[in-house]
Image 1 (spheres, rainbow, N blue to C red):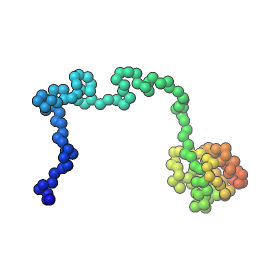
Image 2: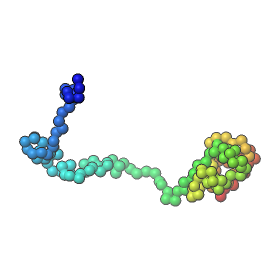
Image 3: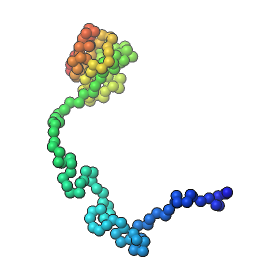
Image 4: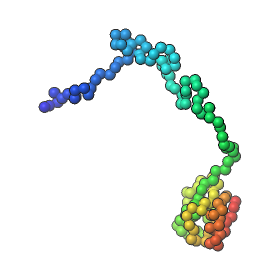
Length: 148
């Protein structure tokens, strides 16, 4: 056996159907696209959710809920994050400036402190908002909470 007599397995290779190459091929004329309509034309692409002119599902279902235009989206910082930051930088007071310097928030985002994790050190924390349990956890250790 050498390169001159290599062949693919029987039945594994078959010629590709050449569409639109005349009536003798059996696939000429409309080129398997049928007669008329958008799908027969070149450049056709169906819009997502299009149901053939039927009212689409997203328009049949009722709308619900409310999305306020001036919603304030806070950057959530956990107590465990404050603990690691205070330990690594040896801090007693944590302000948004320290959080920005540590790369935890960018300057535009308001900060909310959440109660995920535990706090072991007395800290003075300054932030835009606090969850009730986070505020309680900080004050129980003798720390102070200041809202901007």
